[in-house]
Amino acid sequence: MGQKIVQVDAFTDRPFAGNPAAVCLTAAPRDERWMQDVAREMNLSETAFLHPEGDSYRLRWFTPTVEVDLCGHATLATAHVLWEEGHLPRDSPARFQTRSGQLTARRVGSWIELDFPAKPIGSASGPIDDLARALKVPVRAAAFNAFDCLVEVDSEAEVRSLTPDIAQLAAIPVRGVIVTARASMAGFDFVSRFFAPRVGIDEDPVCGSAHCALAPYWADRLGKPELVGYQASARGGVVRVRVDGDRVYLGGQAVIVLRGELTDSSD
Image 1 (spheres, rainbow, N blue to C red):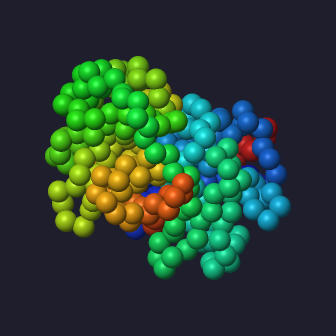
Image 2 (tube, rainbow, N blue to C red):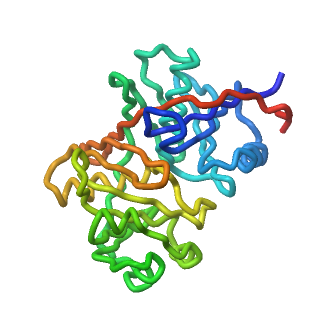
């Protein structure tokens, strides 16, 4: 019998929107090369692999080209699968041991809330001229955290209409570039898009881990700890955020769109 795999659309309440992730639950650790091969075959921004470890799960995330240290949408997708497929009771939290420490997911009504580390933007300014050329829009501010460069532009309209030079963005020495602006549409506080060509993802449809930087950035700018963000990619997705000290709580919904089986699960 082959290895089961599930595809989930995360940060959305309907199929074919949000950010798709594959989830592969195994009985024991698997070979790293096999996991990377599966992620390349799935060709999604992230494929999550997990196995039981004590009273929690060991969780790893792979793009088609590399393993990454933190991923929000694939963690949300993984928690959703554990509850929907009967691996965990619906009222039990999902606990994951990861390269970014312990992460927790819990159900809040029809939403899932992830407990993630905050990744605030530092004081060092980003390469504004290079970013402006790559993004083809004026840059108001740019700075780094341990993963990414966050770029603020003038308006939601500019975020939505971006057609960046991906090759130039790939030259910026970061995991990805977050582009954001204050929201103009009702019901949202900020909008964003996320480009990560250096890790094999030209544009990530909805990036949960980018909101670990967006949440403290906009909480400080707007003077409130709870906000709602919209990632304005072609698929689009909604992320509720709540800042509490050095933690960020990311809220989203998820939908299973595909259940399958890998016919060759050998290491």
